[in-house]
Picture 1 (cartoon, rainbow, N blue to C red):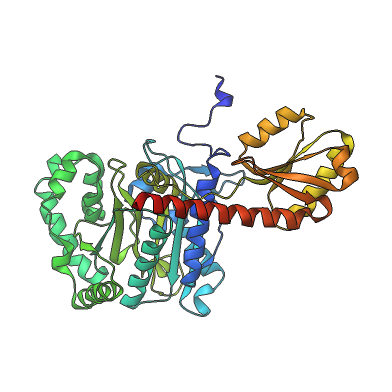
Picture 2 (spheres, rainbow, N blue to C red; picture 1 turned 180 degrees about the vertical axis):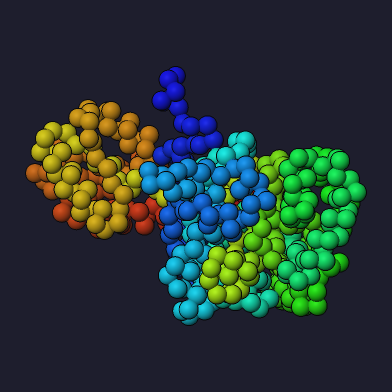
Length: 441
C-alpha cells in the first residue's frame, strides 16, 4: 500500500463501527463532571513552546524528548500540546478567570501529541479527558477531584481499579528532600543514564521517574519524600486521607509516585488497572499550587487530573466490558418505485424530528437488497412501501427480531412506531421473566 494511504506511525483511525464506544465514554465523562459542577473548556491544539517549557518542565522526558515543536512562517516556536493542563492555565491567566468566582471548575477532552515509541494504550496522537479545579487550597478539593475521577471510571464500567496516592511536598520541604536525593544518587552517579546525570543537579526527583531499568533499580532505594514533609504538607496529606476515608474511597499510599511533570506539588495520585502490560495507569493527577504564578499569573492553588481514552478502551476490552450502544436504526423504509422513494424520504424526515433513527434506500436497490441492508444495519423495524400502500395509507411494521407485524396507517406512522416499540419492550421483559422463572424450577 502506498505511504499516502497509511496513517502516520503512532496515529490511529476511529472507524464508524468503533465510534459508539468512544461516544459512550465521552458522554459519561462529561455528564459525571457536570454532576460535580465542572463545565467544558476548549483550548487550541498548539501553544507557544514556552508555555510547555515553563509549566511541564525542561527536565522532563516530555520536554526533552517527546514534544512536536516547529517554527511557523512568522518564526515563532510553536508546539503541539503534549498535555492540556498548561494550555488551560494559560487561558485562565489570559482571560482573568482566576479573578472570577472560585473555585473555577473546568473539564476538557482533546487530542495530545508526544513523539514516543507507540505501544499498547499509548500513541503519538492520543486523547485525554481531564479536569482542572482552580482556586481551592483545602484538602477537601483534592479528595473531591479524586472522587470525580473515581466516579468517571465507575460510570464507564471499569473494574478492578486501585487508587494510589502520595505527597511530594511543597518547595520548602522539597528542598531538603532534593539535597537528600542528590547525596544518594551522587554516590552512584557512574551508573546513571546520561539523561539522569543531567537531572542530578537540576531536578533529582526526575530520576525517580526514569524508565531505564538500571536507574529504576537505583531509585528503588532512594529516600522517600514522605519522610521530609513539612508540618503544613503533612497536615494537608492527612486531611486528604480523612476526606477519602469519609467518602468511602479505598486507597493505598505509594511513596514512589512522583508523576512525570514538574508542576505538581503536594498531593499526587494514580488509578491503576491490570491487563495492559506496563502501561497500567489509567488516570493520573494531583495538585499544582505554583503553576499559575510560575506562568505569570497571581499565586493561585489548583489541581486536576487527566485520563487517556485509548488506554481506558484497551482496559475495557481486556475486561470484556459490554458498553451500551444506541439502536442504530429504529425503522428502515424499503421503497419500491419513485413515488414510494419520495414518500419514504418524507416519512423519515417526520420521524427523525420525533427522535427516531430512520433510514431508507439511497442506492436504487431492489427490495431484497434493501431488506438485506436493513438486516445488516440492525434495523429494529422495517416497512415496505409501494404504490398500493401509499394509495391505501396503510402498511405493516415488521419487527425484525421475530418477524411479528403491526398494522399501521402511514399518516399515523410516528404513533404506530412508538406503540410497536413499547409492545416490543413489554414482550422482551415478559420473555426475560419467563426464562428466569424457568431457570428456578
